[in-house]
Amino acid sequence: MRISVIGCGYLGATHAASMAELGHEVVGVEVDAAKRARLAAGEVPFFEPGLPELLAKHVASGRLRFTDSYAEAAAFADLHFVCVGTPQLPSSLGADTTYVEAAVRSLAAHLTPGGSGSGGPTYVVGKSTVPVGTAAAMAGLLETLSPEGTDVELVWNPEFLREGFAVQDTLEPDRVVLGVASERAEAAMREFYAPMAQRGTPFVVTDYATAELVKVSANAFLATKISFVNAVGEVCDAVGADVVALADAIGHDARIGRKFLNAGVGFGGGCLPKDIRAFQHRAGELGVEEAMSFLSQVDTINQRQRQRVTQIAKELLGSEVSGRRIAVWGAAFKPDSDDVRDSPALDVAGRLHLRGADVRVYDPEATETARVRFPTLTYAASAIEAAEGADLVLHLTEWKEFRTVDIDAVTRVVAGRRLLDGRNLLDLDAWRAAGWQARGLGRR
Ligand code: NAD
Image (cartoon, rainbow, N blue to C red; front, side):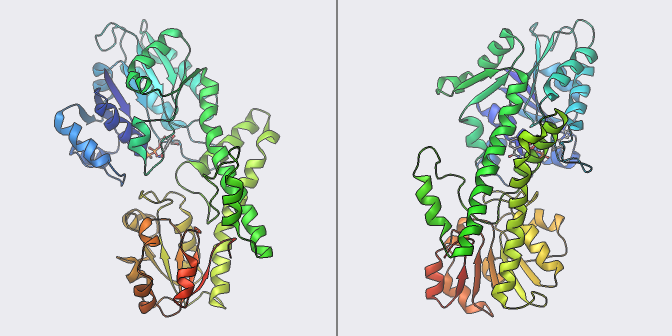
């Protein structure tokens, strides 16, 4: 089928290349000229394993191209995926849906009664994460703004991909959620996603509001799980108990599960933090603020982990951090990504820098994105270079490289053997055996 993908960031570029891989013909609509030029040249403007190969393959094959023209998209396809951003509003906890609205308005203006010429109806499929009620509003907007006689319908199809596993998650999702207003829309989407149905992927077909809520509820649940174990970790610290053993033990219970129970410096990125805030905000607008008020605690606990790390850094140094050299391993909000949006690692690095510490940051992939956001920090070219002359090493993003680092090599270059494992993934016994004072969060 011929499709357009509107907004080609982390979600859209991955969706566009993956749908080309499934055999569809794709035009990506991207307003950022620099990003569009790189995509058109077959280059991915961010780090995502497996995506560069897929994108280059389909740009070369001609199955995938990029434009800034909505007219071109409307003339090319009858299935349009909206993948633009929904960041937090500057003035409140709510999500900014103006990019979604702008995309729908721009597209609607170019739709025609005959569609792209196939004779079938046109479907606009929202994939962005939005506050419940947005889809209904966008359906209304499409109806109002599309030229008289245009047969257009909205579908909401939230996306659950994880950065670092984006291609795999797009091609082999755990489930496909479809918020539809008609049986023909369901049939069209099932036909489009037929390769996934053939793999046995579960389809959940529902209304717009439920589809929107599925996405924000999933993120709220994951964030709650992380903050739960972090809160328990604080109690573990108070009594000298071990949150890693505790998580292993409760995780054996199939009702609980071990995933997302790693205590540490907390969650970040372009999704979880803004999604739980937007969920709370929307609940308030709907008059059910109390129901989601616990998410404010989830957020507070998460933010507190960043303070805990700076506090423990101070304790390990035995004094103020000012004037001390600190190596920060990690800048991305998670491994296998160069995304530094609301990154706990970069937040902690920034806090320590602002308190006068000489902070040296190293990240295998996120140095350039981090430099744009935090140009005043010093960036190193390797974990060892960051550790040179350091009084303290902080492990804040769980890249594999840090778990397999040569401890002796690090030991040779530091000024003081102090380590804080902010992700509770390093072998503290091995570091202690090399003479290090090594701590985790909530861990002995
Ligand atoms: P992003 O900022 O990386 O990408 C958004 C892109 O849309 C940008 O390239 C921007 O230039 C473009 N854009 C903005 N307005 C446009 C317009 N009117 N026309 C065409 N292009 C336009 O954001 P992202 O991380 O890809 O997230 C997009 C949405 O997907 C958000 O709602 C997010 O919550 C959701 N989501 C993201 C992920 C993820 O892991 N990144 C996962 C699931 C869902």
